[in-house]
Length: 278
Length: 263
Image (cartoon, rainbow over the protein chains, first blue to last red):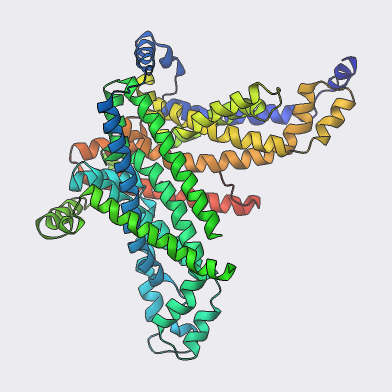
């Protein structure tokens, strides 16, 4: 231990700059602390403390009545169906959009062609549409669709469909472009039509990766659809939001466990399928 | 045989998914064709049209700016708290304090991480009241779970030699950690923290839907009061924030020469 003291005795040569840097960071953070009304003592106010304690106290025992379990099972199934249906629409929408922005089938790439300027011109707005679809978060889409089509799973399905189509369109496009484009090129150059070039040149190369990524996204969609329920878009989230609002901790804890199980099952299925696809 | 498997498995998965999707549509019982035809299509178009033009009055823009600042502050503070808490959790979770605490710390981190931010935010609104503080705490709690695990993995994979050398030269465990281990893992820690901050900015924008402050809360209230022009402005602000953060982080990554961290 004496040696340790001896080691520590010559002061850290970087101490000054480090302290200065910390100080600067704290000064820069101060406005953030103000704006975020960051006052952790609020947590300890007797009013808040007792409300939270009462809520947490009701977490056990969990709500396990047959009626409630039936309701939770139905909500969980609805979440699963909502994510799957949304994903199906997203694929149906994202796949053609990805083909539209892809250049791997572009004839003008082979050589001079009539109307070669048309391609890029047509691709730009589709690319913009894809960006718009994915840069508005899914839960914002959900909130908008709840206003447009009412409370319930339809809003969730549409939100996932739009947001995920934007993401899938981009990723499918990248997969088309990154894959081996020679087969498609060979078909085009030997005079095959674009439809043939797509189905015999592009799809066989890109399909395993496309399916693998879509499976991963399906897993994300399940997580997302639980959360989307909080704005009224159906499924387990909507029930959980109701129970939290009613301060019914027992119901909340049951639903949290079901939610974790749901995510775990989706995780396992997705990992399994992706391993098979590799 | 392997070739045949490669050709057919994707189609088999697709077919299975097709069946699941058909079953889902039947189970939900929503007629999406009806939803986009006739009267309901007209209503939907009218609803969408109601968002135009966005409200750009200076007074409202100032409020949106304030909401955006709240969102950014929430994400910055939440991430910072999570970095500190995550680092503290990472020590036991990486097995530094022996066997019994390691699995315990891992379980705590798993629970923190598996509950989504929005659910944490709904809890925090009960504990801390409406406003950005709740969102900040929700981000902090969830992100400490994520960062704690990532930090723990980094610590486990860090080379042991520098710290061991210090220990053999007679230094204490604390000194050996701060001067032997921390400098080795710090760049990775910073990279994870920045990646998570980027993610949290996006998240902070929507946490307000359950009352946790920022742009989300503004959007929720304006839609509840049918102020669609204002809502359009807020959505545009959200898109702007997400785009700017995307560009900045891409630039920063190229600048730092680091590949994007995955969690």
